Amino acid sequence: MSVQTDKLVIGGREFSSRLMVGTGKYADFRQMARALEISGAEIVTVAVRRVNISDRGKESLLDYLDTSRYTLLPNTAGCYTADDAVRTCRLAREAGLSDFVKLEVLGDEKTLFPDTEELLKAAKILVKEGFTVLPYTSDDPILCRKLEDLGCAAVMPLGAPIGSGLGICNPYNIRIIMETVKVPVIVDAGVGTASDAAVAMELGCDGVLMNTGIAGASDPIAMAEAMKLAVIAGRLAYKAGRIPRKLYATASSPLEGIIGE
Amino acid sequence: MDIILNGESRTVACRTVAELLELLGIDPRRVAVELNMEILPKAEYGAKALSSGDRIEIVHFVGGG
Image (cartoon, rainbow over the protein chains, first blue to last red):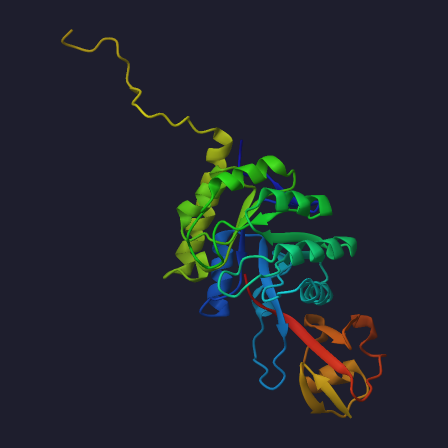
């Protein structure tokens, strides 16, 4: 299996990279653009916010994002109700002229865990309005099945709380989610370093989405490359099929012909 | 005329959304506009007349995860 032929398909669109990255928290737009480039990501998330009327900055995010290269995935970060999330998605579609949205409806500020009731409500409306919905969800297989049943194009369970860097806290749930749904499973949130991304991919996830893991690193450019390689390595290892875990040793060298017998 | 622009009261001298964006120096291709809670398609920026008391939201993309 080669990485080149192993495409990720979401909402009828094909992607070569299984790493999706955010555009927030970088030192400046230049650093963000370089990190995105090195990461090899094709899908990048953006947030939707009011234009600052009184203090209009000279540069805007889109000056640094080549939209012919990247698929923008607007998020509904900061929305705590289905109504606000739906409203944000409608604005995002008008601003970006794409149906792709990362739907997140948050439950509280401390954990940023999803409000699952509002999430389902919003997903239902958005799918009906023709959006390609990628929901950020709890790592709950039943909820993921419900989101798939509603018509979401993927499910994006959290590995750990947003920005926590705790890694994949419940790999067993992620595995069950993958057995439960047919749509792509993207681990979204919690990745702190390259091995976390590799673990997600080795579990068989279809992709990984991260922002703070790269942008918050001491050297975001180097971490972007590390994440790119980790996602590729993890995917290849998953496809290659790892050896079973055993408690005791199995010799790698032949037992016959040992001298001195 | 008085409008509520991105949550703040403002007095502006423009008849349409297109004129408002021009006045504010905003590239219409890079924003989305909501007029009284309804999305305003870009094709209507030039034709849609503003009325006193209108609530207008102008949003764009910023960095986020």
